[in-house]
Image 1: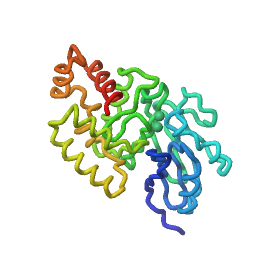
Image 2: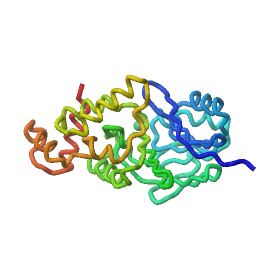
Image 3: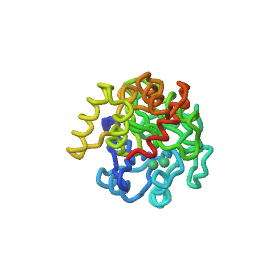
Image 4: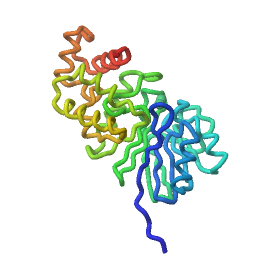
Length: 262
Ligand code: ZN
Ligand code: FE
């Protein structure tokens, strides 16, 4: 009889700033958002893992591009958003669905989080307090609105912010320091933000990932979860980026100014 190893999450860096997430128990693995196959295959081999399933959050190539090559090596189910045209998907998911990975004794529940793309989904594993949220919520920021509206993104982020504070946020990119530079420009008097910037800069100086963060930390320091904060709204008003305190307008103004922030 073998004793079952605990399940852990391994970051697989890809491209310039993506993290492909490998969830494994030292024997079996699932991969979230394999934009490229080679680094996933290398990590599976290095850790002697067999792939059990592929989980996709949205259709962008840096998240789904590695699926065909992985399927040539592993005959596994591909879970993904029901409303996005990803030809490799075998199991189409929407909010309320669950994904059970028998090999890892894991269950994920599916959340609809449109905004970055129209059908973007997130995977939440309550038993381990894990959230895989693709390009919706980032450490210190949020995804660009390529296909959705500000109102949709506000709803999606509120859904994620309602998860327990201890929830580990596994987003798909190492954008944290640039996100926090923007956060400092719009929320500079926030002491939790100042503290976080020092902590995350130290991690990057040691070449460590800043991801995962937690929902609790994001609620304290991420301007896109703080778009109703009075100090942030006052600043947007004084810079004439908004003309009322309407929350969606404030969120849209924050997202707009982040797009052009250098
Ligand atoms: Zn994307
Ligand atoms: Fe991406």
